[in-house]
Structures are given as C-alpha cells and as structure tokens.
Image (cartoon, rainbow, N blue to C red; front, side, top):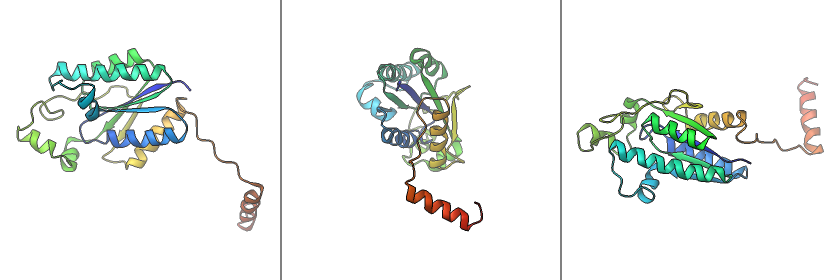
Length: 199
C-alpha cells in the first residue's frame, strides 16, 4: 500500500481534528499505517517558538508538509489537520508531496462563533487575540479541493463517510470487503427473501 497525505484545512473549530481522528480509526482498522499531525500538537512540539505572523504560519505549514512527505514516501497515510490559511503554502506542499488529497472542512464564521467551545472567536472579536484567522487575518479557501465537507450542514458521520468513499473511489484506500456469509446464513437470507415474495 502506497502512502499519501490527507490534508484537512479549514477555520478554527470547523471539525478538522474530529474528522481526522475518525478517519485515522477507520484506516487503522483496515490495517493501514497512519499518523496524524494535529495543528495544535505540532505547534507545541515541532513548531515551538513560532508566532502567528504570515511568515511563521507559512513556516509551520511547511514543517508539517515536510513530515507528511517523509511519512507518505515510506508507506504511511499522513493526516494533517491544521488551519493552513494560505493557499500558496498548501499548494506548495501538494507539489512536494505528490500523493496529496485536500479536504476542505467548510463552516461559516457565524456558525463557528455560535459553536465557539474554546471562546477564541469571542476573544478575537474583542481584540484580545490578534491575527486570528477568519476575523483579523485571512483564510483563503481551496480552489480545487478533492473533498469538501460542510460541517454546518453535515453530521460528523456524514462528512466522514464522504471522505472514506472518495478515498476508495480515487484508489487511495482499498474498498472494505464485505464478509462472506456462511451457508447457514445464506439459507436464512434466502428463506426470508422467499417468504417476502422476492424469490
């Protein structure tokens, strides 16, 4: 199985980490090697000391991209879940990595403010947090992402299914094989279908 990078981009609170973990669990159950690079965790370890200027944000995303490239070329599914607000750096990572699937986790600012679990949007709107993506700093939507999930309108399960189905269709992950029925189970199904008049 060849490795690839699944890159979740979207604003803070849109659901990137939640979906990344759901996909990770599913792929591990299918026997794939998976590594998740979560934006918040990366900032604590790989990008400690970087601030939130455009240059520092770009450097942070380049570092995540570099690790994803190493993992992908060694047969691992690298899942990145980071705001990654600037299109240019996401596209730069795409070119470097090659096997790259971009997932745009879409959600309106109004909904994100309403959903604001960490209270970050409230602080950004009051000016307590500077350079906050979507409020005082830009977020550049992907132009041609392979997958778009709208977490304002979809449940996490619906978004998750859309991602898995697309990865299967694109040939990045093998489709889930249905377990074969035993003869006894087949007989029961056949009898049930006959009783319902289908056979």
